[in-house]
Amino acid sequence: MDIITLTKDNLETEHICCAISNDNDCQVASKKNWLSERFNDGLVFKKGNVRGKCFIEYIPAEKAWSPVKADGYMYIDCLWVSGQYKGQGNSTLLLDECINDSKEKGKKGLVILSAKKKMPFLSDPKYLKYKGFKLADTAEPFYELYYLTFEENADVPCFMPQVKKPHIDDKNFVLYYTDQCPFTAKYVPLIKNIADEKGIPFKTVHITSCEQAKNAPAPFTSYSLFYNGEFLMNEILSEKKFEKIIAEL
Image 1 (tube, rainbow, N blue to C red):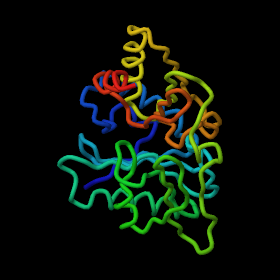
Image 2 (image 1 turned 180 degrees about the vertical axis):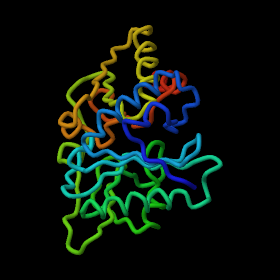
Image 3 (image 1 turned 90 degrees about the vertical axis):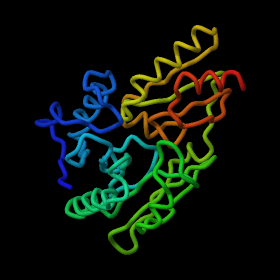
């Protein structure tokens, strides 16, 4: 499979893969704006030359919108291969592209967010271990940080202290999110509207800078939902799933 690297020159004409088929969708505009603003920070987005879910996105860890300390590493925001493109070595192809590029840029290695088991929107720990990644750090209730080094005796990455036990002081529902994942552009307003219609207090915190993200209260800054101060989930909710949570709580 041919690999395309997105740039400011081809961004508007390329499909960005994230399960979005309609280029007029608000999610497309949100994601492409996110990418355009991050290119100057060293972000790289490589995709298969297909109209589907086959891509990898990574950025120098110092500029990653993630509460991790991994100076000198490259942070993988997302590695996603699914549907008809799975089982053909495409994940390895994309990861190798990232490894080679990161080595050329003098990085110590790669770091990526995962979990104790495969979970929505997080990298599969089984696959990472298979590719030689090692566990660097953990955070409650299920987060794991993995790393792959290119040199001996490299520093081991770690989570920022505040996310080891995710907690906030606010009561009721509080949702932290960024524009890094395009799904937030659509689904954050939808569930906020449901809460408003039901008279349920619901606060959104839109993270709009790397500094904010580094100080976020949970490892997954794209989407972290809290309830009465306690971390609830990182899964980006549809209307039905949110209504089910409301009924349960």
